[in-house]
Every structure is written in structure tokens, then in C-alpha cells.
Length: 325
Image 1 (cartoon, rainbow, N blue to C red):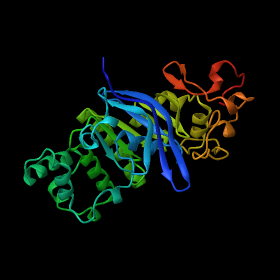
Image 2: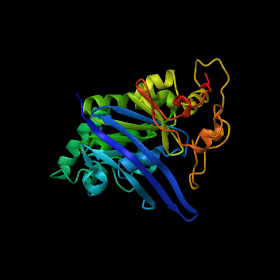
Image 3: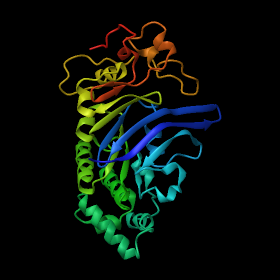
Image 4: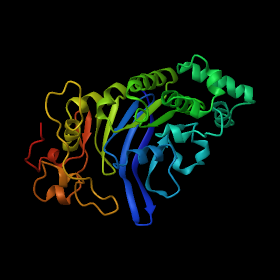
């Protein structure tokens, strides 16, 4: 039986801004087994990228972890030197491939810097880097190492970032929107590559994406986030084929699909303001199933429904509404 490599407990993350405090992650808990994969899905502003940055210890200076634990192999990484975690235990593949790499350095120089904790020489660094790049499909890795980032295409830069993330042999990789900055024709290649590295390197992966439709092809588990909280989590295919939470249902109906024969249904309204206190269920103002004062005043608890968890009063037995089909 596999052990839990990652346990997140009641994580709360906020940003301090001039206009006030933004509570971006408001009490998230989940766990992942070794070599498992998780997709974190939701609208822009739901807190999914902040969650990924927190797990990889890459939050900006104005961010504050107010509460919670992030356990990797049983140790709380929030209580250790971040330098001993970043890249070694948890590695981040950032969203903006263009801004992630210095334009003043060649790819080889960037690898040399990243590999400094383990390499004995520049030649050793190039040997390690070229081996990883070759495993990711580069037929001439030494040419890539001698290139500057601006000389490479978006797809090539994405693969370089993946190689950098793998270079210190981490246990967990967090990829923030890995398909959003590449051409549509290359997205399948990136999806296939992420699946391949998970198998080849036996690494646990967390994929942050707004596109719930790709989650079954990428991840074992999918977590749907809304307003800083997970509202449903479970096997990816089960969630995509039969979502339980009203938000997950409406999110799937709002996404275009090639074989769809019905009109798209956008979700009405706007997400709540995370700089203000939220009372009750955060989705209540947009939910077609909201009934009485329960949804507006009481935060839903966790309900286990087979192999899934959903956070919705519908499943408490106190409401008599029906979940939309």
C-alpha cells in the first residue's frame, strides 16, 4: 500500500495589499499518495495558483500563510528552510514560460545554476541537463543548452522548464497552467509529456488548470476550487462524467466541447469578493439550488459520497432541492 507523500491540512493563505487583505485560500485540505496525480481546477481567482505556489514554497513576499500544514513525507515543510525544499522535494513549473527564464543567460547557464547543489563542475551540469532534455524529446540537447530562451519556441521553452523542474529529482512537481502558454496544436504533446514524466520519474504531479475537460487525461484525482476552497474532490473521470457539486456541474456545462450538441450555459453572476468575509456557502449567490437560509448562513461541511467528497448542503438531508442535471 502506498503512503501519503503529501498532506495539506486546513491551509489558509492571504495577500496583504494596499486596499486590504485578500484571503485567496480559505482552508484547503487533501492528501496525495506517492506517484499520484491531482488536477486543481477552477475559474480565475479561485485560489488554485496560490495553492500551488504555497505547496512549492514559491509565494510572493506579500503573501502570508495564516494557518495550516503542508506535510511532505510526514514533515511540515512550512517549518524548514525553503531552500532545502524548493527543487529537491517540491518543484514548480511556472505558468509564464517567457518570464520564467532569464534572457541574459543561455539554457545551459540556467541549468548550471539550478544544479549547483549537486554538480561537481560545469561539464557535470551539462551532462545531467542533456540527459534530462534528451529524455523529454530533444534530439540535440547540447544545442538547446547553448541557446538563449528567446531563440526557442514556446513548446521548447515549456519542455526546458519541465527539465529544470526534474533536475534535482523532486518528489512532487507542481505545474501551473502548463498548456495555457503554448499553441493549441502543442497542447496534446505537453499533456502526453507530463504523463510520461510521471511514469518515467515516479513523481507525484499537481496540475493547475482552468480546463476541467483535460483532467481525466492528465490526473487520477481532480479537485474543484471555488472562492478559495475545494468544493468537490475525487477521481477525475467520475467528476467529469457525473459531477456532484452545483458549481462543478455548471462549470462543465460552460466549457465548449467538440461533440457538444447543446448550447453552452455560462455561470451567471460573479465570484465573491475575497477581501470581505463570506457567510454561508460562497457559491450560494450563483447557485440554482440555493434554498432558505441554510446556504446563505451556514458553511457546508464535507460529505463523503462514494469515492468523492462534496461540500454542499444538498447532501446533508436538510434540503429538499435537486441537483441540476
